[in-house]
Length: 152
Image (cartoon, rainbow, N blue to C red; front, side, top):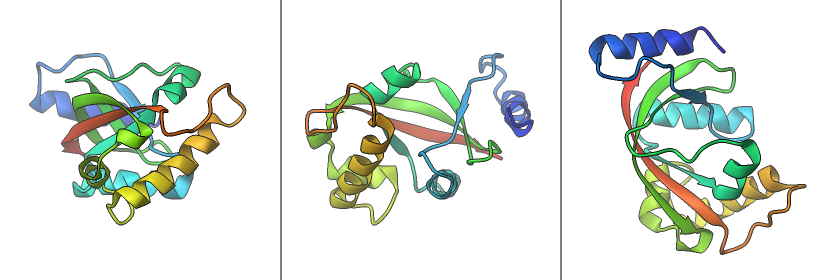
């Protein structure tokens, strides 16, 4: 773990003493350096306020579905802490049910649903490759909306 992660959490707790003492999960978005760093920067800039994980990916990786009010620390690819976020909502939808509004809140690409579908289909195909799961319109997606509560 990069030393910036616990330092950012400690700093956040100074201003939010009721926040849990335990360090929350820290993670980077995406499966490659360029996209992970771009997404971290979009979070810091306030443009990215949502993310979409397939339930299949969460199961494969053993990552729990976030709950409303959970905190997490967003990092860049190298693990450098960039922001503390707090989950505001989780809606499980099928791939085809994801909306234009949600795509815009994700803050990536040209902010359209078409771009979202193309980019996310490719991402899910990469992360689910070799598993029992296939990418299709009925793939279950955890649509998480979050708030940035502190930046590094």
